[in-house]
Each structure stands twice: as C-alpha cells, then as structure tokens.
Amino acid sequence: MFDLKQILLCISAGMIVILSSCAPDPVFRLQSDDENADDHNSVMQNGMEYLISDLDQSGAVLAYYRHIGDRIVMDLEVFNYSDEVVRFAPSDVHYVARSRDFKQNANGELEWFQHVIEEGSAIDPEKTMLDIDMAASREEAQERTALLLDGISATLDLASDISDAGNLTRNELRKRENRRIRDAIYRTERRDYYYQNIASLNNQRTYWETRSLRTTDLLPDESVAGEISIPLIENATEYEVIIHIGGEKHRFRYLQREYKP
Image (cartoon, rainbow, N blue to C red):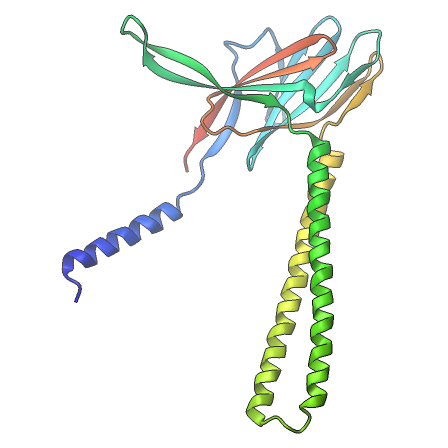
C-alpha cells in the first residue's frame, strides 16, 4: 500500500512533468542598435526597418524580417558602384553573435562585459538545396523499397490463398481478413506520409531556390536582392552582421530580445 507521502510525491512529480512539457518556447526579435551602429540611414516600410549603408564602391540595404525555427531571416540588397564586375555570394555575409554579462571588474565595480559566442557565414542556399535533394532521394528510395516489399507480400498472400483454399476455419479467415485490412491501412498511411514529406521538401527547395539571395555576378551599377539566413543563437544578446562587397565592409548591429509567453 502507498502512504500519503508517496502519493503526494507522485502527484508533484507528475505536475512538474506536465508543466515543463507544456511550457511555450521563447519568442525572439532583433532590433537595430542605434547607439553602436555605423552612420546608417534607415527607412521604415510595412513595419520593417531598412538600414542603408553606402560606401565609395558599394552599398547595402539590410532589414530584419523574422526568426523562423533555428534561423534568423533578413532582407538584403547589395549594390555595385564600382567600374568592375563584383561577385557576391551568401558567404560574403558574416555574423558575430555576442553575449553581455554584468560582472565585477578588476576594481570590484560592476560593469558590462561582452564576449563572442559564435561567428560564421550566412547559410549557403546551394548546400541547403543539395541536402534537400538528398533527403528527397532517400524518401523516394524508401518508398520504392516499400512498394517492392508490398509486391512480394501480395504474391505470398496469393500463394497462401491458393494453398489454403477450403482449409481455413471461419475464425482463421476473419483473422486473415483483419490482418490484410491493417496492412492496407498501413500502406495508405505510409503513402500519405511519403507524399507529405516530398511536398514539404519541394516547398523548402522552392523557397531556397527563388527567395534566397544566391551567388551573383554584379555588373557596374547593378544590384541584387533576396533573403539571407543566419543561425539563431538563443543566448546571444547582440548580432553584428558584416556584408563584404568587393573590398568594402558594411557593418550592421542588432540587439536580440527574448520574450517568454
């Protein structure tokens, strides 16, 4: 028999599991860091702030769009003001994620200390599309294998029907019919799952193919625009985004805010 203490402990543990499993994920937003940013102009359009950076040979316009899953999506347009062809690629977008901690300095006074958590380049659309294509190929191979096994199973069932004709009891016939109904339901669910996965992969590929900014050769006075994505670092409080165009660097700074529902 359980005593009252054990029952209360079980109830408490169950409540902790329920509460922790139902906790909503935090929501993140980026906001331009006006105090530390370079001398940028900015324009608001449909709720998005476009930061404008112009240098001698190039220009860049960057706007935060939203956090999606494990990435941060931004709108970017780059301009070539030089007299030469400039190749621009997503790898020319560099990010530095930093965190700030309130600590004591050498004099025992409290002040903000900043350190780099992670740095790297924007997500490569070409590699992402390759990963998607390989995932689709694996899905198709698994479906072909499943169809082959379905054919073998159907052949064995037919052979079993012929050999067992007139020899099965009513109960055995009912069990065989129920098994085949379950197999048919499983095949239908598997096929639906396959089509859903393929459709999802195709949609993902279409996004990276058409909306993301991809490697482009810019002629003089040309520009290119598209979306770029950088990884979400949840404990980062600041992002610096550096756009390399030709030999020039355009720097943008954002503060990351975390909201807990």
